[in-house]
Each structure stands twice: as C-alpha cells, then as structure tokens.
Image (cartoon, rainbow, N blue to C red; front, side, top):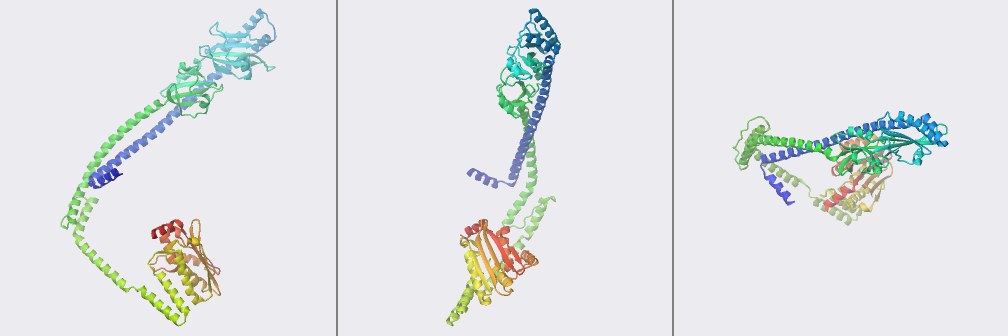
Length: 590
C-alpha cells in the first residue's frame, strides 16, 4: 500500500509533458494489448470452429462412404440367402442322408452359385454357406484356407436375419460377416452365411481422408475394438476411450489417445453398430494459433513503438507554449502583472495565451472589485442581524402575559399564552430536524390554541406507533398539514368535523397520514394543488406546498406527498419515509 501511495505522489510531482507521455504510452500499450488479445481470442474461436466443422464434415462424409461398403457386403449376403438353388440344396443336406457322391454334387452346385456372388468383388476373401448339419460350402481366393467362424450358431440365429460383424482373430485382420439363412416357405433357419472381407476394404477409405488436422481415424465395433484404422498397428486393440463414454461424448471433447492429448469427433452409428472416430492432436490445432499469436504480437509491438514516438513528438509541440504560460503565471503569482506570453496560432492554446494576457491586465481591478463586494456583503449581513427580532423578548412577553392572566384568575388566557410560546419556540427553532415526538407536541399545542376558536367543532384523534417516536424528521412537517385540514376542510363544513393523525411503522418505512371528513376537493382541485406544489414562483411557500417541497429536497422521490380527496367526503394526505433515510439522519444528528 505504501509503495502505491509513493508512486502516486511521484506521478503528481511529474511535469505535464512527462505525465502526458506516460499516460498516453500506457493507454496505447493497454489498447494494443487488448486489441491483440481480443483478436487472438476471436481468431482462436473462429479457427477452432472452422477446423471442428471441417473435421466433422470429413467424418460425416467418411461415415457415408463406409456405409456404402457395408451395404455392398450386406447385399452379397442377401443375394446369397435368397438364392433358390442354395435354399433347395440346403434343404436336401439338412433332411437327407447323402452318399459321398451326392454330397459332392450338392457341394459343386452350391459353390457354383457362391462364385457368382462373391468373386466379382475383389475385397471378398471367402464366402461360405454352412448347413445345420455343419456341411461347409466355400469359395475362396486362396485355396486351402480354413473357414473362419467368429460367432456360434445360436448367436447367428438369435440375430433374426441381421448380419453380425467382427474382426477375425486369425492374425490376418479380415472382417467376418455372418448371417442366418431362413427357408422361404417355413421361415425356419436352414443354414449360415459366412463372408470374410479384407480389412483394407475399410481402412483404405480412412487413409484417403488423412490431412493436416487428423491424427488418426478409427472404426470401433460394438465391443469397443478397432476393426480398421489409418494406422494398422491399432487394428484389433481396444480403443483407448471406453465405448459407453465414447457414445455419450460430445464432439470436440478431449481425451488422451495413444499418449497424445487429442480432440475426438464421432460419426453417426452405422447400420452394423460400428462408429467412426476421428482424432486430432491438440498441438496440431494450437500450432497455427501460436503462429498467428506471434505474428499479431509482432505487429502490435511495432505499432506501439511507432505510436509512442509519435506521442512524444506531438506532446512536446503542445506542452512547450504551456511551459511559457506557466512561467508567466508564476511571475503574476509573485505580484508582477507586466509579464506577457507570445503564443502563435489560433488553436485552443493560442486562444488561452491571449486570454491570459487579457486576464493579467484586468486582474488587479478584479481583485479590488471582489474586495469591495465582500465588504458590502458583510455590512448587509450586519444590518440584517440588527433588524432581527430577539425571540427572547417575545418569550418573556408571553410569559408575562401568562403570569398576569393567572394572577387575575384567567387560567385559559394563561394556558394559551404558554402554549403559544412553546409553539413559537418550535416554529423558529434553529434545528432542521426534530424527533417525531417533538413534532407531535407542536401539533398538540396548535390544536390546543384552535380549541378556543372552534370549541368542539373539531375533534382530533391520534393513532401513533410508539416505535416511531424517537425517529428524526424535518422540523414543522406535520403542523402545516393539520392547519390545512382545519382551515380548508373542517372550518367550511357545517357541523362537527373529525381530524385523524396516524403514524405507524411499516416494512418499507414510517407511514404518515393526516385525514379529515371536511368539505373535500374535486379531482380538478386536487390537480391544481399538485401544480401549485410543483410551481417555483419565487415566493415563500407555506402549508402543503412548503411540506411538499421540503420532502422532495430531503428525501427525493421517496418523500412524495400523496393527496386523496372526494367532494363532501374529506381529504387524506399521506407520505412514507424510508427507514434507511431516517436512520442516516439519526446517525448524523448523533
């Protein structure tokens, strides 16, 4: 804290030129840094979003290409299972005991059909049909290879005709596709189709999409095993992210893949349950961002240097004539009014120099005028004090009247004189604020005097919350409202009238209400009353206007006076003062 204050004082003691150079240089540096950081943040967000969208588009397109290959394999198996000759031969094998020769004929017949379905596709390694009696009918690209079955018969039949896909475990990285064959007539299973295709049929597609961003592409099956990848060494291993987490993961999520912090992007699940996962190393994305940061930082630094040099030259040009003006003003401060400055130009500084010269010429005359004005003001204040009435003389006079009246046996006059003296003290009291209890005393004194005028024509009632009595309010704030109610409301009324004074504590503050059942006002009269309260005509304000304007001064919008009236029914004037304001006034008084 001490270091901060020390630097603050040092800054105050610096010359104007140095302050301006330092201030503008700091502003330029802060502005340039802010713009650079903002540009960096915007570029980073836009770049990441564009990269993300690009990779997602690639992932989506690749998924479509993979689905086309899946459909192609599905079509081969479908053509095989609907082949009527194969259906017929399987029916024979499953229901009859055949000789070796008959088995050979059936085998030749079935495999001839399989050749037409399989060998036209270069990616099919083998296509087999297996009967319920486990007779195998196979066509292969490499003769002598064993038929690979990755699923049990029950698993295939439980699939209800859907294909099952799985990576082979023979070390050749082939993909096995199995599907049940159902009899067209009985809809009962009669055999199994077993198709093996090359893993390259799918991984070649993944290698085609490798680009600047993608670090790796993986096809993950329903068991979480990588069945194809642009990096073949990962085929057959479990994907580093758990399958359940992978399925619920948002695009652009981060995970460690093969010890590399990467963003993950997943495609839609394919018909066979596979999922394409594209990974992008975080470093690949951030590399371009860092390059942009270095470039923009260099530009910003160059701009700062150029701007600071320009600021120094400009401020020197501005502050030189100000230095001349400062020297001349120092001379004037020492009593030498002959000094003049010569500043060329019609700009603000030139105008300031000419104005200063005129000021120096007239300053002695102005000092003399001010001195004479102060003397006149003091004399006026003295005369005003002489004209004031000594309130103690009035108090002593009223006390004398009270004593003389009581000596003569006229206690009513004595009481009225004492009450009038108390009311006079409250009226001309110097304090701006008094307690609510003191204000109520003034109201009661006023009503006591009015009883001698109106007799029992006016009956006053009080509803005062004792919790409010010690709060501070502006002096003489209720009595004018009571006086207004009697003079304008109850006095013109025929017969007896009622006056009610209510002060109660509410949640938002203290509520004040002065109401009567006098002659009341029309809506137009109420409107005119508000207009008179708002009008500032320069005359002394008394009554409602006085209270209205003082509440506005002390409490602002919170001290708004509300007037409610109905013709021949009466008038109610209310206002509410917030506890916060009242507590602040109480603390100030204390």
